[in-house]
Length: 238
Image (cartoon, rainbow, N blue to C red; front, side, top):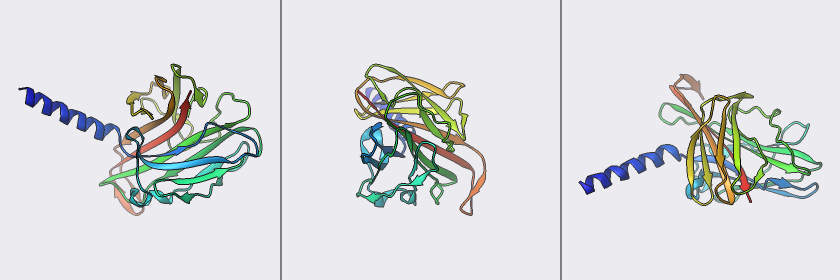
């Protein structure tokens, strides 16, 4: 009986890990920058919670052919030039003025996963100068996670994030919270697309929102029966 229970527990955990912690694309960047100083950016693909960063040559389909955009305050987005570093892409930008900058990626791979269309995205704010409420109104990606408080929180603080799509809230979206300690937990957003969680440890975190819809369509000339979207944001807890 103990053997059967142990086997059942193992299979349950395996299923939970495979279903909850799927691969994602995420941007890593310090939450604060300074005028006229170079600000470093890194883009990874893998599983953050297990510290798995895939070699670029092994990234799914053509995910590596993404475009990273910089949204400077009051200006049109511009592409950030990146360098292949083996297990990530690296780049930088130099803020010319104070304000909140956003780094953004949206990539739908050309290949389907069976009959499912996939879309990976990431959005990260960088505050230059005085910190204030993060204003995401100018960014309207197909799916994005918006930090509702500071991009640089304190350990033990209660934090909130909102999930939106094209500027509209996404109620009941699944949001996974991953800590660099290896801890991860899945939450469900409320009717306003907001999820609340506690910053249990200091260090870096990644939030990933995901949606799955059984709706037929066509992508790259190929028909699909369902679509999955996953969007991340990166922040730090002091």
